[in-house]
Length: 525
Image (cartoon, rainbow, N blue to C red; front, side, top):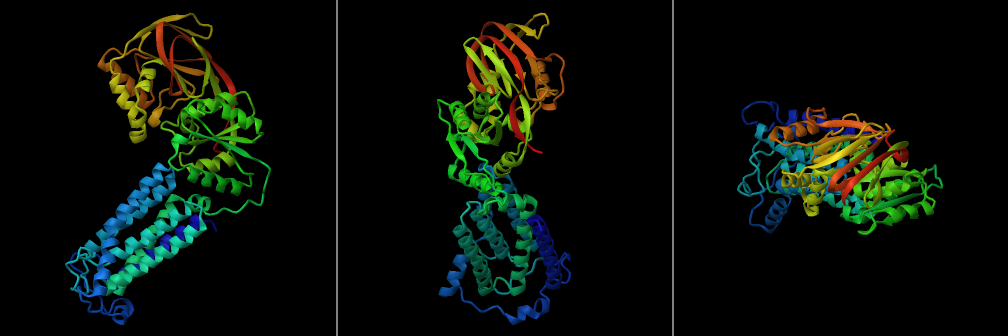
């Protein structure tokens, strides 16, 4: 049985158990007034374990209170929230979703307890900051059950069996100690503790079910070598500036490679002076079967330019700010999912575009442009991109709100030249840009065409139309949007230009020609 079905069954099972236990503990849980304990708790269990008369000043009492404060549900909630941020920045999107659902279990417990309003069985620690007014389900046990699950899950994310074993023992020991401490302080009865555990377990399994237990756990645990072992081998060309933990990336790739039965991976690191060109050559010389590119749009373009025209498949592990090619090809942004796809996806031939300019020639796979867009790229602060990601482009756009227009002659294929005054000439091999906005509604990387947008907004209403076109993906009046196999732009002066988001200097002439089906990319089946 697939793990996700197991988690679904466990989630429903614990949720139903919590509902039944709540009905037994509180005969009328929906009553608006405070709910009293049923005699002895469910099946008389509370009577079997009466709350002790613990003195707050005793050594045992102070120790129990100190532990309760350190494991306070609000502290646990903060730690899980930090885990959400860590998982998201480490591009473990499924894990971040799972942790967010787990975190939701703590405020849910608070709302249920507030509704049921069951008073604490003892009064000795009623004024402690670790005490809650309502005790069912127990807040500490719910929080610690979720925290122990998080601890085990994060341990598994690091592929170390010793960490998994230690995390499991530590986590569930903490749950047991928390439960004993709450009972010893007179803050909960046995039925309160059981209710807290059932609620926490239900949310923990819900988190794995929704987040995708098969995708999360099986890719992190020490994966066994596939029975269908082969002689295939992949190379990973990676930009080290895009990853906070390169060792984690290596472990994640190694686990998926073992699972697919491939030979150990060749690792090739880019440098500031070489974003991936020589690395792509080395991968070809090594005779690998697939090149995986772990980086941003600049790394993807550099590697793609060298692989174009060869039969070498390129797979993407998105790690940049825009990840435009990945988004347009429906490549998952979750790193684990992207690695699995890189080894198991299907191949598709896509177009590249060769650009010739005053000082040379380059290929691009996403977009290229002259004027305003290049100025925005040049003005975008790299440090700000790390903090607010695509929002940094918006900041740069505001800084260039009054662009300097230029005049250019535009020639499409064999059509007569047209002279235009504009602030931007943008060419696209794909349709979607940063933040999922569609700039070229008809563009696809397999149509053998390059789309062209000419913009010359001179008034606020023109800028509003341009913004509306970007947001809605619909062509707006006042902007030229056309397509061709060959595009020639001849400006009256040198104008800044960019290729796939990287500024490339200034040029008076920009010639673009589609290389149809030049690059083989791994895409979803």
